[in-house]
Every structure is written in C-alpha cells, then in structure tokens.
Image (cartoon, rainbow, N blue to C red; front, side, top):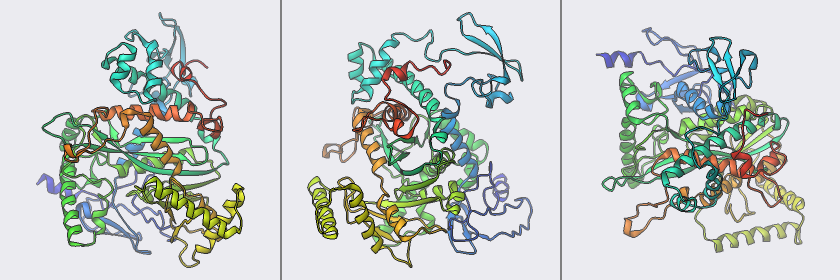
Length: 580
C-alpha cells in the first residue's frame, strides 16, 4: 500500500531545480523551445495543464512530447543533474581554499581567499601558520600549507613519481626505481593528484576572463576505461566512460569527468535508495537518479537481451529503448566493487553546464561532438540561450574507425588529388587550400536541408571518410560561412588527448583480447579501483595543459592565455595556494 501511495505522488514531470529543467522541447525552430513544462501538485486528483506538452507512456518508458513540433525526449531528473554538476565542480570551486569548518555555517560556501572580510585574522598558530576565525559562527581555522603534513615521509620522491607516471611507467616499476613499496606509490599518487587539482583550479579560475570575446572550436567526446576484475570467480569487467572536451585550436583540455563517485559506497547507496523508496519509482523520479542501482543493472541486462533479439530478427529499436543504448550493460559487465557509477547521461548534462559557465563571455562557440547518446540534449539544455542568439552552433561528427595506415594514406592521396583537380595546380599555401575546400563543400550544401550530413572528400590521416551534420538551429548562417564551419568541424583535438592519455599512462593503456582468455580483455597494469582513474586522468590533464610542449614551443595553457611560459614539474609540486 505504501508503494502505491509513493507512485501516486510522483509528479507529471520532474520539477526544475536551481533553474535547471532538462525536460523540454529540443527543437530551436519551435517557439516552445526550452519552455519549461508545468508541474502541477501530484496530490491533486485533477491535474489540468496549460502548457504545450503532453506526456505519454509510464515508468521508465515515459516521454515528454511537444504539441507544436512533435519532438520528444525521455524524462531525466533535474535534481540529479544539479547534484552531478556540483560533484564535478566541487574541486574546481574548493581546491586550495579555506572555508569555515562549521558545516551549518553560511561561510561554508564563502572561502577566506575570495571573501576575506568574512573572516578575522587571529595571529599565528604554534606551527607558524596564519590563524583565522569565522565572523559568522566564531569557528577557528589555520591557513596551513596543504603540501606538508607530519604523516608524510620521503615526499621528495613525489617529483620522480610524477615524472614517471606520465611517461608510461607502471606502479611496480616506480616502486623499484624509488626503492619504496606499491602502497607508498599509491599514497604519492594521491598527493600528486591533490597538487594537480589545486594548481589547475587556481589557473582555470581565470579561464572565463581569458576566453572573453574569443571564438572557440570545442570537440566533445567520451572515452571508455576498463577496471580489472579482482576475483577469478567473477571475471566480468567494469567499463566507465569519461566525458572530455578540448579546444581544437589551442588543444587545451577543459575537463575530463569520469562517471564515477568514489566518495559513495555502493552498499550505502543501496541502503539510502531503499530507505527513501527509490526502488518503487522510475529512475527519473528517484532521489538518487544519477547513480546506477542494482535494479538499473538488472533492467539494463533485460534491455540488452531484447536488443539482441531485435537485431537478430531485424526489428527496429523503439524510442524508449534508445536511451539505454549509449551505456549498455551486458552479462560481461558489472558495476564497480568500490564506489558508485554514475549514469553517463547525467555526467554529459553536468559537463555541458560546466562548459556554459566557462564560456559565458566567449564571442562565438562551435561544438564538434561525437554521436553519443544524449549529447545533443546536453548541448541544447546548457546553451539554449546562445543557440537562440545564433552565437553557438553544434555539429555531429563521424568518421571511419579501424582502418589500416595504408588505407588511410590512400584516402589522403585521393583528397590531395581532389584539391589538385579543383585548383588546376599543386597548392602549398594553407589558407588557399582551405578556401578551395570550403568552396567545394559549399556546392554540396542543400538549401532545403541545411542539417544534412556533408561528406568531406579531403580526408585526414586521423579522420578518414569524415562526415559532419549541423544540429538544427533557428538562425542559420550563410552557406559560405556554413561551409567553413563544416570544414573545421573535427574531433581531432579530443582524439589527440585520448591518444596521449593511452600512450602516456600505462595505467590506462588499452587492454588486448586474446584467444587464450576467450576474448576477455585484461592487463596487469590496469587499475582495480575506479578512483585511481579519476586521479591519473586529472594528473595527466594538468601535465597535458601546462607542462607538455608542442611543436610551436608552447603549451595549451600558453595558447589559451592562462600561462606565460611552459611550467616544470617542480612548479606544480611546490605550488602553494596560500602564498600570493
């Protein structure tokens, strides 16, 4: 009876949270675009609505339809989107800063570094560090150097571990070189991670100012990482995606957010979900909608089996089943043993909202996105106001993967021959070649179907047989400008980061399947805990942005304007946010 009452009180659609409403029309040409649906009181028996939406289906298959244009979308929790956004931005906001230690105090959200007038200096602590007290509640804090604690020993070796970690050294190899134990290496990686987070946050808080009035070309994609099995009796793998965005021009990586929360144990999550009645609700109406529960895993296995049957019988997949296809769980996969996995759709929604905060003062933004499930929705919900203005355009990009180098070179040769055919002579000038390419792409564009797929005949060695598609917009640019945008739509920036991640970190090197393992992928270098992926991803992102020098002698941070010169490993490891 209690389950029935909890179902009856579920709202028509998830209510908006912190002005976040991801359940609305996604068609920019519709006047109902991004208009919030009404959410009547679920306790009222007769719930008439005066909006331009209708809801169809029930439970997990419930969808929201626009009455004006017919576009539809599955329901997602706004509360879960907001919480996931806060999770991925927590380090960015709080790293290297001191907040009031009282959890119920108002100054828990106001740091001493940003709001010094909210705190009072109270002399020095016995350690010699500055002591401050909160003017609101009187709690006392010490501005300690976060790099130095009494429990740390042999920390001078952290610098060597940092260098080896981003240069293909594996854990036991680092332990042998430093004459330490694997346990000490894990502790060193934790310390390096905290330093990299504090350093990156300190620099990237300046990004909105550095990006003001700039034109951006941002590539967004997801990369899958595998966790080794820890029990021979259960050899299922854990696969977790990370949402990453990179500027194609400067190669600066804005974020690599793993769909994983290491601070929440699965047992505690399941207990909390059962206590608040989540097990009796559809996923979009749950208190913990962003996390994978055991019931989600079982439901995904059932849907995977249904998709397999449909594929065998050549039956088309219905709309209600496509939402789970972006992060499939099969009998060969399992949820992580430690920590809680997050639904990739919510990480995408949160990631684009994070980008919207960074790019708020940019002059123009062009997104090049892989065809991940839910990526168009995440882009539209975060950049709706800029899409309406016309200063933000999104493109879907696809190209042929798995081709051999000989085949790729053949395609590149065909592209060069095509350019020679257009010019009548061999073109060496970069701008002249791009002008000819854009003019040719302009002839391929249709006046009636501007959102068609456009095949680029000028193949790149890393992007063979590439095609691009403009995501529907209400303000269509001219054909000439659109041809240039198609030409520069590419995932090359984010693919380069993915390749560098696999090549630089032996921890994340792609596993090789063998016949002796019955096709199962396993490597002794891969992590057994997903929290380590979060750490090494952030460490490598810091190294990639601020330390790794390109062929032009600059780092991505120098090109984008948050660094004046290449940094050294010592600059990150000895960084102290409390010293100005």
